[in-house]
Length: 418
DNA sequence: TCTGGGGTCCTAGGACCC
DNA sequence: TCTGGGGTCCTAGGACCC
Image: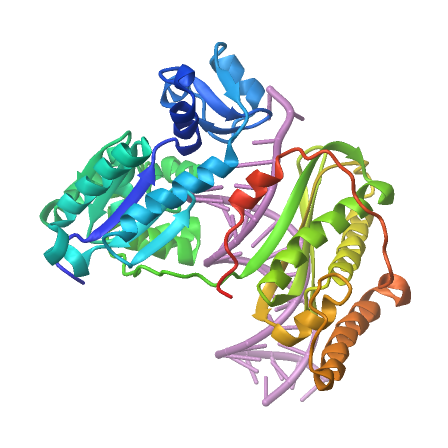
């Protein structure tokens, strides 16, 4: 591992809210939030009242009665998030984008051109402020985890460089909740053991930690607490799954309700897969009941699929199973469809998408094999669920989106190259 | 207090194979 | 007839992240 801290973690502050305050001067200095039913992002002025992302709009208004809500300008978020990443790219190609507003960068190879990591971080922060008008916090350290912790400590609108000589001193005084992988549940378990700081976690016996949190999590947190983080910057991640979900409020758990929703979700997912020449073998559905309890049903096929109708029919059958297993649940509040075990599927993609896309041109000799695979997958489904599972489904869905499509697209991860 | 949408990884138990 | 161990895959559920 290198001696110098060259990993930057750059994180735009309260991103959506900052963009809204940038676009509309009337919102500056005010407690405001993006969203409606749910808070997608809150300004620092709102956070001072305890308003947090993910919180229901009602709860947020309780905490902060004068809170201003704005609908999102999602295309602007995409544009400005990309622009901030582009500024980082002026200094190094070694960038791992985590989300729309957050990225790691390794500047080890470019300090001779642009100065020390601290200087590069300062330049990036100034340029994002000057050119885009947005606050961004940056952490600089020897490891990804420490850089990320540092950027959280730096917020709002700050820079923290962790000196390698004192990194454990820096880390060990901080609360465990700042660690990557410690959420509310883990934090609660640790607290029950009297472990409140990262230092206390570091000094807890590894065995008891693994017993408390499981082998993998115990091991990982122990490593992170001692700053034994060996993860490198990864520029491109291959997608392992793709999914879509829709909150329904509270609707009767009937075929008339779930069929059109599942067809819409299947179409969203498979069209994304087909666009990247991908297909997947495992179809998973989530059903959340009115009481917020959720169940999962999954089925793995012999061959990968990406056709809307196949995924939709299997999803419907899985939902029927889930409902049959919970006969007392009369209402559902959310449905989700996801496809995993994803593989590249250039040839079969063309076949399965026949009639759905424009791509009908293909070498005739491949048709047989592709059809065979599709049929085999269908046969597997029929073996499991009965003859008439796979058929033609019509229903088109006209529905009022609970969330704008632009936000869905924002949340989608790029499934990969191509 | 009834909460969006898109992901990753881990665990435990069971089926199945050698 | 009863009994072992190791490995892989699948399913269901859960925690966590942005």
